[in-house]
Image 1 (cartoon, rainbow, N blue to C red):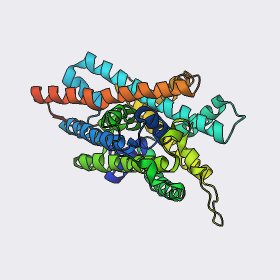
Image 2 (tube, helix red, strand yellow):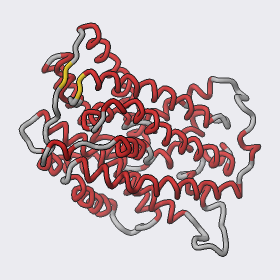
Image 3 (tube, helix red, strand yellow):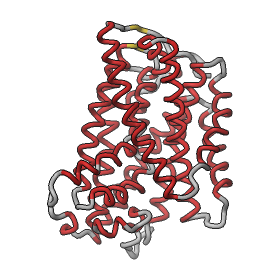
Image 4 (cartoon, helix red, strand yellow):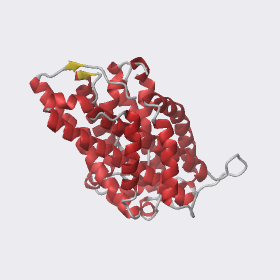
Length: 370
């Protein structure tokens, strides 16, 4: 494969980033925020979380552009040395695997609960792995093209399904505004860390862009799309169910969709359509996570990108089966959220500071992933 074919366009990068951030959080975030915040101010948490996410994205963009065409796995060694850089890279690979495992396990749980109740979850997971592998072995370009194709369709269906939810919407469920002050809102910022996990992959993908100078545009639009969608979802779900009902619903998103029904049109009930769309979103997020992990392994070792993908399948499968139930899966999500904060803000911030102090800046070229 020629080097020129491994570049992704600005639009592909925007859809790739936004698709990575729009995943299982659409199911888990409303309930988690309702429990943590306990007031109708859930939507404020998402806005603040999105602002902090954009600030961290600007840090990552500034860091990546100082080392043109070098990924995180390559330029961190130039900043902090070979050994510390290798440790950071290994931790980043583990983090990507953790997110990927969380997404595909959540995808398996949803599939089993709503579609294949009698099917063992291990069978569901293995089936998903091999479909993902078929896409992964082709490298970043097939992944980016597929996501570019699917993301607009998923967003349109999402907006349609939730807009129909206004049939049961009660504006009073969003009142009062800041009735208990700002303290509950601050408590609700932690769950947004998981929601925006995956933003750190900018540290890898900016090096693969055809025009890296558009990275700030990618950060803005790639984050604005999921923030808008999560904001829309939480507002509609809160208005349709109320905060108290959201606390006691396993999947508030589906609970809302099951509240309304439209007769005389192609779909009278929309939960199946919505489930298919968001299974696609979780699948693409898993694929991106696995790609990043495999790219890291191939960069650090002499193992090829394709072989790294097959090796990592075993690791993902084992991690997937660690949570015994949904409660443990939620704890896993909390761990991912805090780890995301480390890799999206603390690590890039420190690396950028060191690079500025040492006046480090270098051009390079990424290697062929195959």
